[in-house]
Image (cartoon, rainbow, N blue to C red; front, side, top):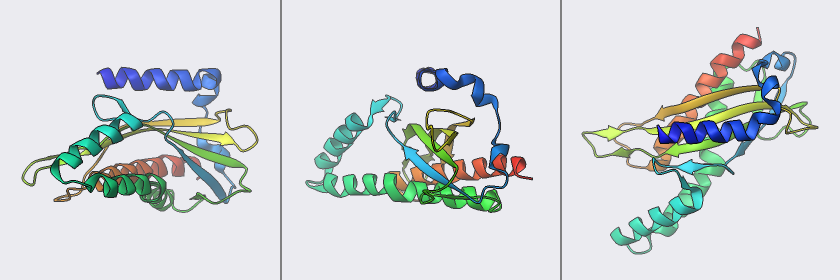
Length: 196
């Protein structure tokens, strides 16, 4: 409950100036060939405690060091690479596939008329103990904005606590990646309705 209120507060704070526009839909994408996608982690909170990313990295690194000296360095690399590459890649793959490639969502379309902002507000890593596990969860707000004014929200969708899991995989980053994959899938299915 605490997490839900916190996320709603962030969303209200970040979009209040353009809330009236957020009720519009994504049919603006009709006829567009490409849309550049930007992932934003500036307002990210992590785990049920709502750590800032910096707090989470510090705490998780300390826990890893207790188990194996030096192990936190490799994990930090994995975390950062996942943020920059693996998570966006899975989102884009599923978004494109389930929107049936009517418009291509890509991180490299500098001339696209519109930009898709994927604001990542909350991540829960989940856990896997073999027989029992808990999925990761990812909360995002996806905004369509014009390139010339990235603060003007033309269309918006929220995906709250989308679960990600992969059986018998003990990597937090992989579970989280699957949350981004499911988010992309859900987004693609919604968007394709506007592109018919």
